[in-house]
Length: 119
Image (tube, rainbow, N blue to C red):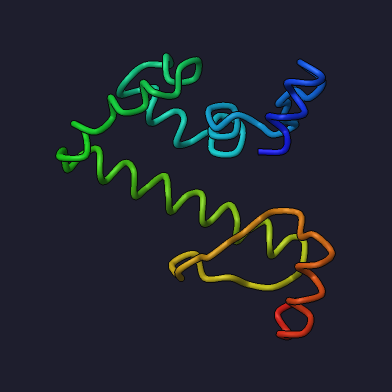
């Protein structure tokens, strides 16, 4: 609300610019196996227009697609388990449930997580 008033006084002073990565670019770079599976079934258009990813919905009914999707998930979990082993020496079972959050943790959140003994 304050920014709308400020924008009336100084039009265009604030612009909405993100340094984030677009979902389609993230998908392409972080999950090339899933990108390949999607491209095989619906073409590469979703990489330019993410709304096109909905075209994958009808394939969810096909057993062959679901099997291929599970294989991609398993391969990605194995890739992560291999990376964890390489970086830390810790063996992770790729058949386990993974709950992974990768994001910079702001200082105030780190302080709270330290209090909770999470970090």
